[in-house]
Length: 111
Length: 115
Image 1 (cartoon, one colour):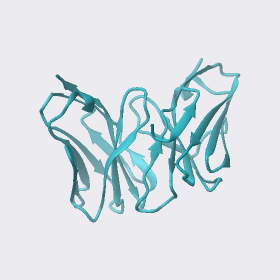
Image 2: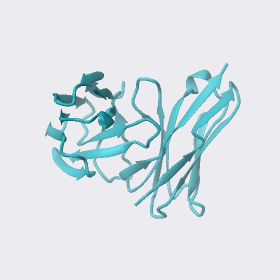
Image 3: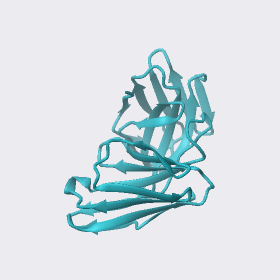
Image 4: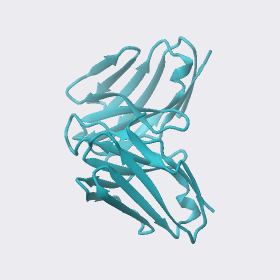
């Protein structure tokens, strides 16, 4: 079955810096890769996703890149703000079935 | 708000108690899910329901019993739990299953402590 590894487990940056979170997956058939943001006391919320037929996707300050050959994908946050502080989860699946999540990255953005 | 409401937000129970978690979605979705979130572990899928029918039981112990009376409501009945069952239990919904345009919407979860 699919296995997703996520790094780093914690990431501290200064406001305005960029943050990068990386994930690797094991099943080359996986074709859907979402990223979720979980704020304290809330459930995970989808922030961006990418399909395997696309190499990069952007939405304002966040972007996701996918390298199918290497089986890894990354979340990039530019111009970080304190409200970006949260736990971020990557996930992978085949056709949305049985999403497999990474272990999460706690991002702390200091003013 | 995500349109998925879970109650209660916090629950403390003894190992001999019976309790239920409730989830309600106001999004008109057809699929609902239970996930378990433990510290420093990936989210674990427990159950999936589509049009009220259970389509996935991810080898969950029988002390967890789901119920889906309609597409908007999902329950998780708990009995004789163990301390290691203490976790955040998340409910989620999606329009359907298996479509490439699907997105999961999560509730805020029930933080369960088993004493």
